[in-house]
Length: 296
Length: 213
Image (cartoon, rainbow over all chains, first blue to last red; front, side, top):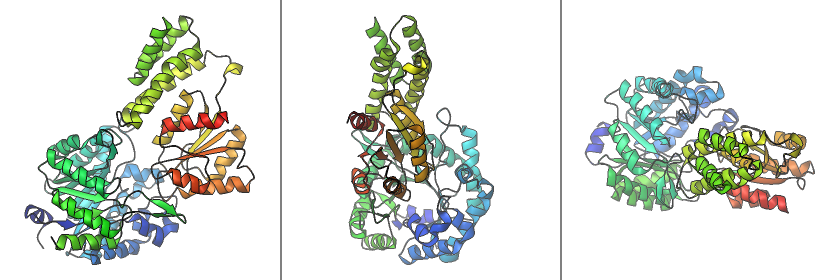
């Protein structure tokens, strides 16, 4: 198998996977109620294998690990920071059982959930150490890609990126931020716009930049075009399926696979090379993305 | 003279300058300006402007938090000059992030803006079960119960709260308000909450309307 970066350099478009949380709710709801979704990694890793298999079978080229909240600062919310290493290791191993070397393992690294000083309690050194500890395990376990995602504070995103680069100069890193639309354009809740993110993430060594989560895939098309204005790097977009409505106490996302696949065409047209899903997307969405990519 | 100090007060809050705001509060009080007037015509005007700018995407969380901190500081200074019995609150608001949900930045901002607008606020923090909202509301003598949910998986606790209130025969005693990223007006309507607020500024405006009624 060619490496991930070889394929990106070749101009190929790759398909990411979809949501994890809804499956964890269905298959391990009792386990994760009131605690970290990462507990599943230790107590019921077979669930992770099942989810990975669904996305693998749907045609995803990248399968993400269940490590979004796997940094020690985040795990500390649930008094599980001591288990950082085991939790991250188990998540990678579960995905590898399914993919072998037929898909890339993309390790999810989400925000710490804490703010940097002076707004919050965490120093830059602590933040760096936080990501260093998580990413070290992920790299040791041999993941193909790091995906630093859902960031809203550019400083936190850069510290995660620096930690990654401190551990490995060569591992591919995708770095994505989450934006909200405003009358003045797209900004993260911390006030970062696409231009600033594109510039800083490139400066500190991201291989791909882009956006995930958000407010529906149509906005993602606009965000991708904005990135292209300010960045020469290839783009990654992992969109959610719109904002959910609860029906019978279950979240229902408005954007169906056909709609999202149509928009994926627009994303690719705008220069996006990794197209995946976030909250609310399913193996059906990924199958539809696969068809779009294969037909182009 | 006081007009000038009101403008300076508002500006200090808009700039999120806590030290300058505190200095203006002390200065105004020492010049004999009425504390309540200094608060409402000066500082509150500032924080409300900050709230509006946040809603319009003209400033962001860091600025909002700095302004809220400055606001808290002057509110404490001015409140301390009122005799205990004379502190007239606009109403009592109980706030919390629902059970299973650990996000409380947004809710903390809401609390700061309510306080800034003269409400007495009890903030239960995060991970608050429906039943505890009710126990605390009873003990606090709340007029409004505000709950925040940031996850689609925890929004159901807001519905549970409505059900528990009905079960306890307390639904008419309190006004309920819901908020949080995935929460919508439609959701509020469906679960029977009295109000939905998109952001902290709207929360305060709707609370004022509800209390008037």
